[in-house]
Image: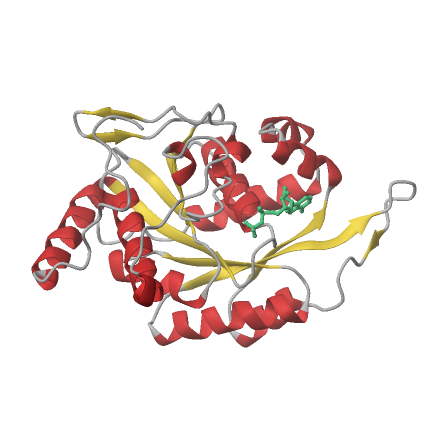
Length: 298
Ligand code: ADP
């Protein structure tokens, strides 16, 4: 355990002076994000759709365009951004202004639970037996708040937040960052993924959150021999969601074996160097994110 870092059992979110405590915490988040241009949430409805991979690729694409970029891996139970970006566990140190986010070889500043846990250890929640659900929600919100406010992000053009699946996650982030620049939704083509993303987007829309667009991942697979694209999943979730929520379909990314291998070994740079069509598309998505007006923070 890095000295000076509290464990998440010690986050006392549920004390009796809760309103004052929350106001003070929100002020800490606001102060820390004063030097951050825009905060963008990346969300999905279900796990395994490639949200973390697309988040890491977008973060890298933004750095390649010259931006200073931070990435919060808010998936506490299955963090994967450190591996994707080739950041070693244990590389988190405490500096005078807070926790210093390690910088990936590609230049992305990262905060992830994986940096706090020993390798192969699961996050162990100590929760009251009969109030586990409420307790865990508070703990997760507390951890996300600490990732926003206790990390010395410095000046950033963009801070991407890779949110765990679930309808409440985007709302939780919005609660902590009221001038959130918006959210990008990741789906695979299937109806199951479409429906679970739609539930989260309904909630986001009800909160007045800006939807920046949809990325459809695993949209088919190219034939090794002839290059033709054939479907991998039935359905057209990307187009369906874009139409229903009147938001752009930003990209359709095929399943790409070389991308999967590069992701597993933390060598996304090798994939970028090939500059295939999906890399070009993701760089264009990064340009869309760069064109979003900065929040009121700046
Ligand atoms: P999520 O964050 O939605 O749970 P991940 O980003 O962890 O999903 O992706 C799940 C797995 O699928 C990972 O091993 C990832 O490398 C792989 N993967 C995701 N998208 C693609 C793709 N377009 N081509 C190849 N592999 C992919």
